[in-house]
Image 1: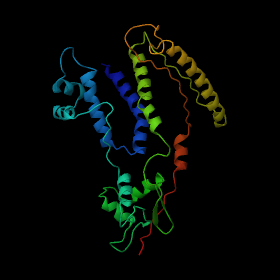
Image 2 (image 1 turned 90 degrees about the vertical axis):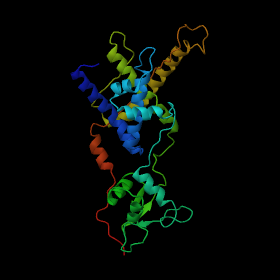
Image 3 (image 1 turned 135 degrees about the horizontal axis):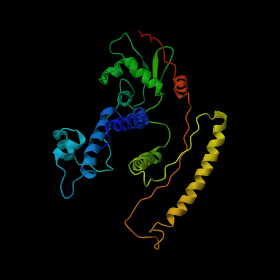
Image 4 (image 1 turned 120 degrees about the vertical axis):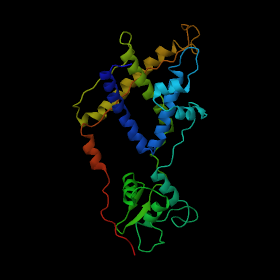
Length: 294
């Protein structure tokens, strides 16, 4: 256990660590309830496996003591069938629910699911409008807030006459991310575990090094990216040779012992020191008051 002062410092470090994670959860449409479910399951799983007592099954009471979760909640979570690679149940967001209904047939699309342009509002009660579409989904969020979010993400556009057009038929990031997302499942956890190991075992630390300069001109970045890639690729080639010589699948004469997984990595990262101002400048201009159509 950490002493109180260091516990607060650790919690602050975790908050900073989670900041970019939460940003991408919001960006990719993973809501807080979905994350909360994942965290609860992981707390129970960790208490059961990482803090198990020798020759004794972890009871609900012990898991509750370690995690702070109520015993009824623990019993519910342990009763669920779960595996480490089972798909996570992610509930629809407001955006995906609105898009889904928009493409779900009349009156918001044709019978083939092609979305129709929708006036924002109309004086005719039964007219197919964007406001009616949002209300039909039972969304407990102001209609204008839903529109602003769709505009921000580029899913819709609104013309000067107050008509909303659906531009993207799915609220997903552009590009093929399947392969890269598999790295997201492994690489950050490996870096985090390395840092924790070095905090807890200063007498035998693992490799953890980086170089940081905070006043690099943007005109140098393109050259730096190329040089960093070349340097990193050379490092990876040497690391591959080093590990391959000791991998028993490749080299039967490699040293013996219990089976271990070893990772050597290198990375490059950059950010603008005025990133908030740049992000604000890139935001799309939102329309002002939208007129109701007759």
